Amino acid sequence: MLADDLRGMFYIALKDLRAYYFKPPNISWGIMFPFAFVLAFAIRNPGETRELVPGLLGLTILFGTSSMEAIVIVFEQRIGSLERLMLAPISLAALLGGKMLGGMFFGLTVTGVVLAVTLAVFGAFGVNWLLLILVLLLAAAAFSALGAFVSVSVREVFEAQTLANFIRFPMMFLGGVFVPVAAMPLSLQVVARLLPLTYAVEALRAALNGGSWGAAWMDVAVLAGFAVVLFALAVRVLGRHTN
Amino acid sequence: MNDVIQANGLTKIYPAGKDRLPLRAVDRIDFTVHQGEVFGFLGPNGAGKTTTIRMLTGLTHPTSGSAHILDFNLLRDVTRIKKHIGVVPEASNLYDELTAFDNLVFSMQLYGVPRQERKACAEALLERFRLGEKRDVPFAKLSRGMKRALTVAAALAHQPPLIFLDEPTTGLDVMNARNLRQMIAGMSDEGVTVFLTTHYLEEAERLCDRIAVIVKGCIVALDTVDGLKAGSQDKTIVEMTLADSNGRQGRKRFECNDGVESTIQRALAEANGQRVLAVNTLRPSLEDVFVQLTGLSSEVMLMEKGGKGGSNAGG
Image (cartoon, rainbow over all chains, first blue to last red):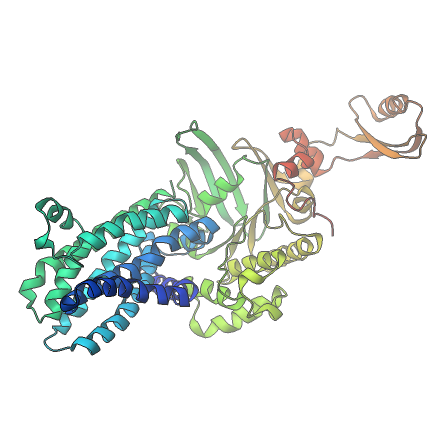
């Protein structure tokens, strides 16, 4: 059974990447959108550009993983092809795991490109690589699970886009990308602590600045928690479709 | 004879929603499907055909009752059951972006067909379903008939011993429907058990070894085609062909409730001066049996389907 599930996850992810993700509009959107936002902010505050790199990476992985994933499941549900996957001899968790894996791989690929460009510009001195890789993986898992949860919670593609943006856009401005969380009013700081992007950006900042594991352990743990809880909720909601 | 499906008291009740009352879609149905047969599941729209298929294939949990499929318990071993069945839903639902070949390979990947067998098996299926020339064409660009054929091929990709076909020929033109029916007959010849729902009574009559008729969630008849007709043998029908003064022809049918001779006399009396071209006695068709059981005619069934494709039962 486990072998069937793992095989199913792998091939669902592969199929999604071929069918939906690696298309020119997605690739350009995944890279251009975060760059455009950060560039706009950098022009306004030219001295602080390097400080924006963790936020840029956080935004890239947020949009790279969740943009397509938030609509793929509901799209396949609309055209009936999700039913093919539900008829396959794999668990619902494996089905959603495959969907998440596709989103994670695409998000990490796009983020890898953005990371390479920023390190080429600002240098890679002092980066805690192991921590960076772990944080990127966990952030990709958390945001991908968020996309999956959004997608299984709605019935129409436009609803998925609306709900995803309703969650992501506030996160973009409150997640410490442009303004450090500590500099926000207390009420907004409370809201920021409920958002996975906040922990992703803080952990990325620690990893890029050569921070120790101790400095980022809580962010890492919270990101893992977001990934597990959102994934479990998505599986539960999808399971209701069979009742 | 082995039974590949045993359904016992299978029931599905959809709970009340915002704008609807609770719906008893399937109501304590019992039936068995024998190995290697084509089992027809007929009924008007909303009778519970698709809900039954969804329960038997693990897409919907039964509210109560049980079923064994290929000796696996539906309530406990649904993943094992899924490994051994193929399902063709009412709408062709492969992936638009993938080619015909890639869609088949993806189906095999999901079901664990060994890597070294996939290519040859996909090529063979494409040839068998006359899609060899469309190997590298995306699913989105295939004609409706080809999409349907490829959807059936994908359901067979892992060589399941049991296949569920939900309205497989709906919407197809006569030629494509005929090809698909030949393929279904071919599957049965190869020992695959086929569970078939259809709105086309002639199709069911031609293909099915046994037929269950479901009305409002309950099975009201289950027998061979001949067995179902035998139940109506006393209902011989007199068909009279008439022509009016302009030469326009029409037919009238009369049930023989009081003997053939007196029915013919009654028919002739109702000719109302029109020219009688022919008077024939007919044995009841499956359609007559169906009308008797459901109160619906096949035309009404097709109209319920929105007239999709009209009657394609020829050929």
